[in-house]
Length: 118
Image 1 (cartoon, rainbow, N blue to C red):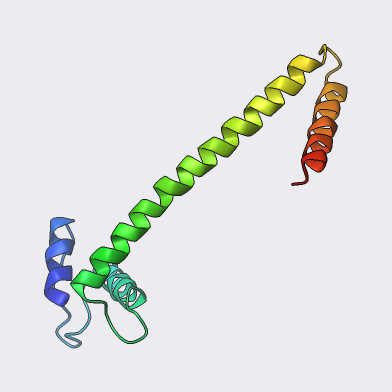
Image 2: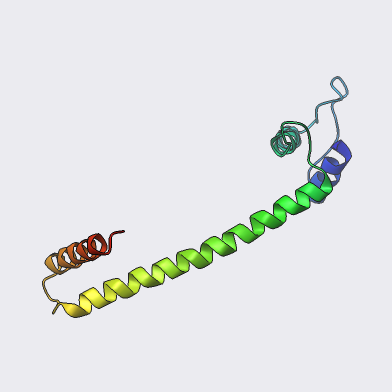
């Protein structure tokens, strides 16, 4: 684990020399800070019983990657529906009264929603 961290840190331009009196710590504060963050991130990624196998981790990443797409599609449909309802409501009134028009639209949408039973 430490060799992977050191390879990553060196690519990022960090000095990975360790202290002589404390070989578990890095000489440069920023490298030591990143090492602690690296360890915490790895610990956070563990399941309670230990680390996931590569197969489990790959399956979990695939499931997470698919979830936002499905949610984004559903969210987009709801946004389009709401936008169309608001546009229809504003077209139904003459306009020109500012906040009164907005309040009328909101009240109309609330009534429409209450009538549809949602």
